Image 1 (cartoon, one colour):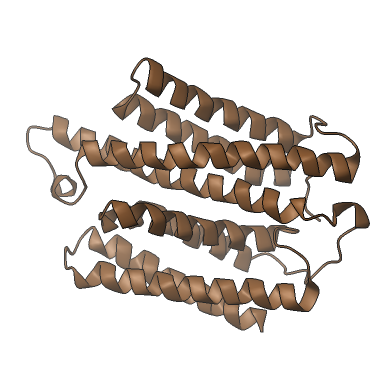
Image 2 (image 1 turned 135 degrees about the horizontal axis):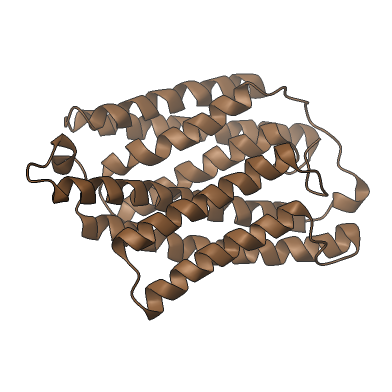
Length: 272
């Protein structure tokens, strides 16, 4: 049954991504509406996948790369819907939702190893709490990344004597900077809580709060990048272009922590 849910989610997410990208070209109000309804269907299918797996296996999500990619994708959609509830700028979806689709597509190429039994040491309610907080924080950073890329494009358009077509399709720099800050101000506390709860879980699972495992080290590096960004933003007014560049660097660290560490470095957090 989870195969059906996965296939449905991948299909509807492709439709959503395609329509958000089309909205960059065709400013027809029907296009983002189709994209948003497709997102709702994607969420329904992904949630069905998670529920089906939990009922059959009783194992929380994120125990292998296949499930983690799908859960990351789910969190990005939630983050996008939350942020755009306040900022009515559907065009942001063209820079965020394709990230969610790429994660799902990557999962499609991975072998699903089924529902694996967790070792007794890992059976703790801290596991789903830690995983949920961490992925939701990362998803909001994906949202900030999308707005950061849009900010740099829009700024480049404004510096031209004759702005290109994107100038009339992207939101103002003020709105993009506001979205960037909103996503960061929610995502950073979630990442912080994710690291704290992960440390507590590690004490139960491995007998130490911190082991300088590659995943822990890169999570801390990511935390410092976003902490520096928020600090400079609040104290010396680093906004706009500087904030956009830093958030792109920070999200690159997020991706390396997720993909690079899992694929290139071995450690306690390595997926089977």
